[in-house]
Length: 482
Image (cartoon, rainbow, N blue to C red):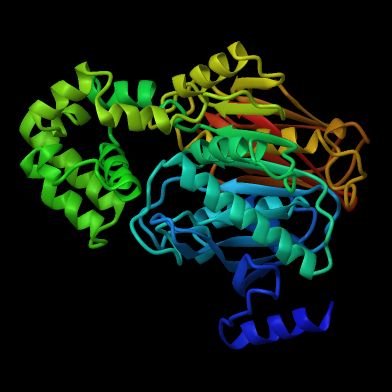
């Protein structure tokens, strides 16, 4: 470890510290070590076997703010204890409750980012503009600033890694879930269309994102339907965010929203309540007045009619501008989704796939990971599928031989009442653990024979991770229980 980095870490034990801009290149302003996990604790926290431990840092870096002026933004940088040439993953986070609920404050999603670092990847996760250290109101699902904040955080993270002795990052990957899927697709485009040749995208994997703002998401917003949509706060957040980004979406909120909802929306905009509180309030108001949580009922009737019927309405133009699929990826892309998504309709992924391929994309595929999983249940299978996809670009030997999926056989898969676990290496005394989609341990027992049966009839339907520890090795596989 070089002397400057030793000084950096020593300072962070006491307090945050400020680097001169030249310390890591012009991008980094501030770096603070906020957490370290060894391999075992990271496995325990995430439910996925880690290949090594990881150290997480809050980075503050220079980017262009929402007003076009320089701004100090923040994000989470995570370095594996053992760095190989797997590369760096830029992870774009999903919708959070407010500006302080971000990766750099080590929120729930930060643990996911750290878990990917435990697989050997350097990780970069920006907080976005208007969140974390950045000023202003967050321009929610605004493609341009999602991309610019993510790219500048990526560069800052590469500079940080270089100062820590890892100067060569051979591969760049981009992914993200939900809002982060939208941001990941926007960031992938911005990297590929970047006028300089300093960044080369290896592959991207947007997950369950609202890529079709102007079509799929608009339909969910303005169409009259019999089924409820339980996330009306997203619609208010989008319009507040676009007002922040463009400045002239409305003169006052009553031009767009009905009076009963405005005070709650203003409280959210002013930071007095979080998004979840706003969402609950809007649902309650809609149900009390109309008996159903339908977003179109929030709108002023004059605005709603114009927004529905006039394709040239200026807000419709803004929605088209923030669609993220109207381009041709050169690098491979996988668009992961679940058909039961209750927050972001899966049609977003199908539209992106069809348009990109029709325009001549070389390697873009949308993949349905589960026909019934909702937005929350889809997270783990989507992240694991993304990890498998990114790992397919690796040509090096893993850090160690933890994972040997060919040695562990689970059947039937899907399982209903009984799951058979077979280890091809023969009888052994091992420990088996079953984790659900949220990483919570559901079953733990000893494996004493080459094949064992497990009663899974008492488990809820869903995706599970099976972790076997035997003879100093670890085996991991996924199983669907119905």
